[in-house]
Structures are given as C-alpha cells and as structure tokens.
Length: 431
Figure 1 (cartoon, helix red, strand yellow):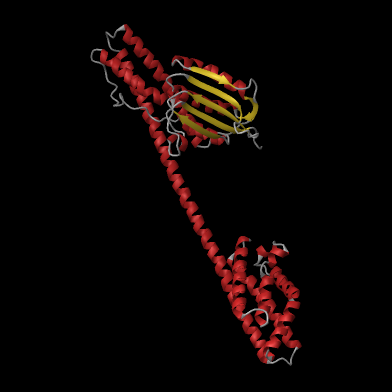
Figure 2 (cartoon, helix red, strand yellow):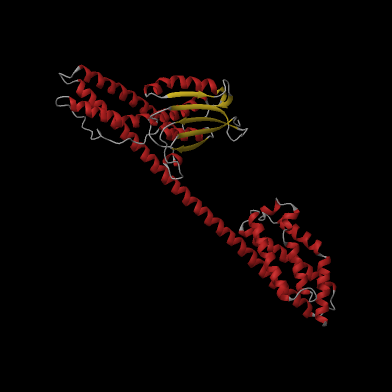
C-alpha cells in the first residue's frame, strides 16, 4: 500500500468516527434553511434517510481495502436513486431535494477542511484526492437523486393526465346517457300523448258504438295515468341529477313500509293475472330513508310485474344473503322470461330499462290502432308513433341514482326462470 493509500485509509477511518457529528452539522443546516419546510416536519430517522449510507460509501471510496472502485460507485448510485425516491414519497419539491444535498456537501467539506488544518504535515495530494472523490460523488448523488425524483414527478403527472382524460371521458359518457335518457322520456311522453289524442278523437266522433267508446275510455284512463307516472319520474330524475335530493335517514321498521307498499300494488299485479307475495320478518328495524327505499322497491316491483307474463313477483326483505352484519337486503324476484344480465347489458351498466309508462305505450298504441280501424274514418293522432316499439324509460335509472344516494348496491341475476334484483343497504349510517 502506498503512502497516499494509507493516508486516504486513515482519512476514511476518521470520517467514520465523525459520521454522527457530520450528520448533526447537516441536520442543523437543514433545520435552519427556511426553504426546506418539508424536512422540518420529518422525524430524525426519515430525515437521515440514505444520507448515512452515502457517507459510508464515501469512506469506502477513500479506503482502497474496502471495495473496488466500480462496486463503490454502483452502490452510491443505488443509494442516490433510493434517496430521490424517498424524498418524492415524503413530499419534497425539486428545489428542496437540491438544497438538502447542497447542505450535505457543505457538511462534508467542513469535515475535510478541519481534518486538513489539524494535520499540516499531510501531503497536498491526499486532501486533493479526497476532495476530488467527494466532488465526483456529490455530483453523482445530486444528478441521480434529482433525476429519479424528476422521473417520478413525470410518472405522477402522466398519471394525473390519464385520470383527467378518464374523468372527461366519463363526463362525456354521462352527458350522453343523460341526453339519451331525456330523449327517451320525450319519446315515451309523445307516445302516450299520441294514444290520448287518438282515443279522444275517436270518442268525439259522432256515431261511435258504445263498446268502442268503453274501450277507448279505458285506453284514455290508462294512458292519462301513465303520463302522470312518467311526469313524476321525469321530475324525480331531474331532482336527482340536479343534486337536490338529500338522504334523510332514521330508525325505520321497513317490514311495515314494504308490506304497505305490496298491499298498494296488489291490485296492479292482479289486473295482469299475477301474484305478488311478501316474505320477511314481521318487524325489521334498520336505519334508512323510508321514502327513498319505498321508491326504489316500487319501481322494481312495477317493472317486474310489467315484464312477467305468468306466475308473479315475490318481494322479500331481511338479512344479507352473504351474512354481512353491516348490511341488509331487499329482493324482488319475478317469474318472467329473464334478460341478458352480462357485463354489457343495459341493466347492469346503467339500470335504465323501461318504466311502466314506456312499456304501456306500445300496447296501448297498438290497441288504439285496432280499435280505430274498426270505426268509420278514424281520426289519426298524427304523431307517427302509433306502432312504436317499447321504449327504455327512466324508472330504473331512478333506482340506480337513489341506490347511490343511500350507499346501496344493486345486484341482478337473470335466467330463463326469471329475474332477481337484490338491493344491499347499510344497517346504519355515520352521522
């Protein structure tokens, strides 16, 4: 070992012994730097981060007996990259990273200068070599640490851009859904009005037979009721989309609420030759918005009855089927033909299939057309919708939005034996 190598090894040993003091000098400078505000809030262990490792890497570079230079340089680069990563995670800005490393450079230089003053007999080459090695290491440390920090900032910015693009795309999709929904509501209203106009025209025609008048009176009554329900749905959806609906929860015996609802809808099911069963405990008290859960269940039951040709609908309530103690469940099961409930189906995607009014329109218009043909010279409604197909209404869109308002989830299962809607709701809400 040459004299220079021995002198550098002695310096390495000295710096190892002074490491704690060097860290103290560095931490004091960091704390006094008003720009390094993030560092002020970090505990000592997190502030130190990889700095002790960097000081050890410098000692190893000075001591030829520790590591070959290539290995020491590789170790230092890894530490520098890790330092940049941690400072990014800790919330430093780019200026803080740079200034903190500058304070470290000052602390090490102070120690080197003190060592040189205390040993005037040292060859000038020793300290020159030590300073050159530290200058190289300091440059690598700064460049690697800052480069890693900047890379992570770019990744973060790219992530924010992707999030914004996805949010904008979602907004566009929601706006399109809203436009489609209002278009469909207008279509349904126009269909009902077409039937009303046809029926009133026939009723007003002189010489219409008594049986024909009775039929058109039934059609007129049914469609006026459908218009009323549809306008209520449109108004409700407008309030939901405008954010004017609020959640008002209280302790409610939902068994009483749902039993009363089923009794109210019993006649509606019987008119179609269907049963409407109720299953659940006689008393079931939970925290819920009674008005909104009734509206959710009413929409689902009406749609189930509407699409069921034989059999009927079962309304049940009680504990969650998954034994989730924090949630309860209300279920609407029908014996209808079922529908596609895969990931791409409209019900799974948006729960926006037809309301009672929309489905009623097609049958009523068709019926009105047949009856009008039986009369001499019937007056046409002139809407062009006398033979329209069933439209997708807004009842289930209201279900979806009300469920979101109640922090509830809606599950759908469907096959050839029928369809089941399960609404899972919290048993209580945090105030």
